[in-house]
Length: 262
Image 1 (cartoon, helix red, strand yellow):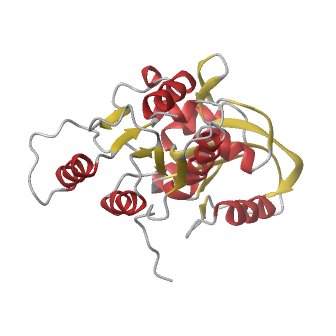
Image 2: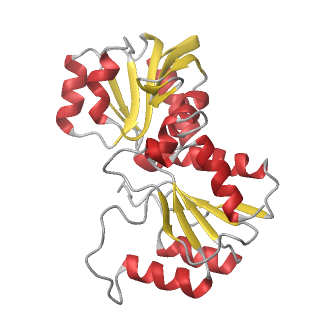
């Protein structure tokens, strides 16, 4: 399959037009690779380490969740990341494509994969954007779990380096309804509270957002940005494999960007 055909297929599934106005989805760098057979390296974040990996593996497309370019750069200078990524992309004929808030909304996107990992049943969007699509997912645990069992499941399935949750008196309380949203989902706390979810799994939450959640009777769980979104990249590789691409691989150079001192 040619790169142009792969992108056409993907955009029929997760249309860039569905992206938020502040976002930058679609082509980040296209150095003239559209007609080539797709050799795809999938990653969460396009970094120099991922670019070097793509060069080593002879990939011709880096397919990323996070955009390389969020805001139009005013200039490109030697030694700066975006400039170096662009230089290497054109030198080695490697395209960079991003699927961000459009990918968040769709079936088998970031939120949907999280819901599947936790085995949520009858999951639906927290904030619908159009029929069957939307941000986050909320559904039921079957069977129900205690809070301690649910936290253990999250730790086992996502392997975050650090799991943070709201102060709660009873880890043995029964949890039946859970909401999830991969990445920075604290702005959806108010919407989640209206769904009657007992627990909300997301990332990048601040001190007072934990306070706000507790005041709303919602147990907020922060498993980190990387841990909550990386599984969707793995699912994307599986979807691409079903298309019989010449070559597709999940990056091993993706980074969490955070370390915790024990």
